[in-house]
Amino acid sequence: MKIAATIARYLLGVMFLFFGSNMLFHFLPNPPMPPSPLARFSSVLVETHYDFAVGLFQAVPAILLLINRYVPLALALLAPVIVNICLTHILMAPNGLPMAAVVVVLWLLVFTRVRCAFEPLFKSTKQE
Image (tube, rainbow, N blue to C red; front, side, top):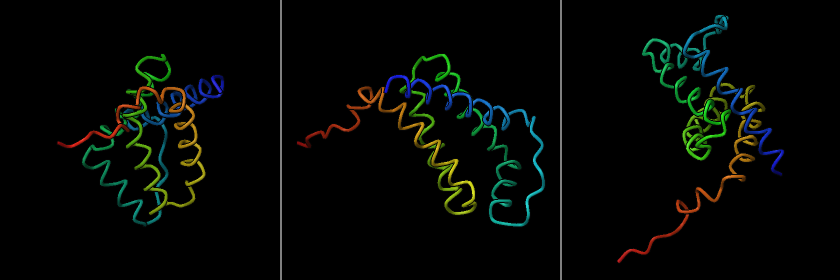
């Protein structure tokens, strides 16, 4: 399981560094999208420069995963990004769901390796 988690950590790191960097530096050409809610959503992200923030929240945790430092923090930062990726594909582009599912599985594999760091989040506190 340790080897699978390490491989998953590297794969997640490479994927998010590549695509997060692309959101920051636009080195991959984007073909025009047919009119759709996803096209409008994407254009709003670009016009408002929100894509730069998303790119940072992908690239920085990816670097942390690749250098194997602050892995729980990297997973915590990537979790909402992954939720948004899944929701985008569920609601607007179902053809991307298989890749989104792969990302979720990779995240879960890495999470299981460092789950002890998240245990305090799941402890119930007693209200007095």
